[in-house]
Length: 127
Image 1 (tube, rainbow, N blue to C red):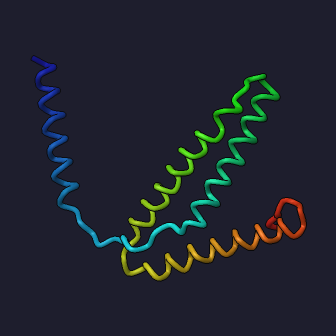
Image 2: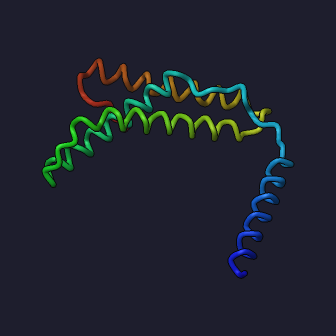
């Protein structure tokens, strides 16, 4: 009998939670999307970090994970871009021009670091 009450309590709590979430509406940004260049840069960064991590694991533990870096990085970078888009969508719609400007500045900075790296044939450093 105690388990039946517990199930009934969780069912009622779930229904109330769904009703509460359904009633809350705020105008949020749906117009601003993550720029494609930023998504590609994020993917490259994730691939580089995972590759370095797998090399470290191979050197220290002897685990050969060479074939797993690309599929995991593609999945992880898509997840991170979706999370970034979700964060952008929570910002109120009145800040759309500001969000777009900030994202474009980030793309320009990443592009500038890429040009510096190509010109010097050395990894780009921020400082």
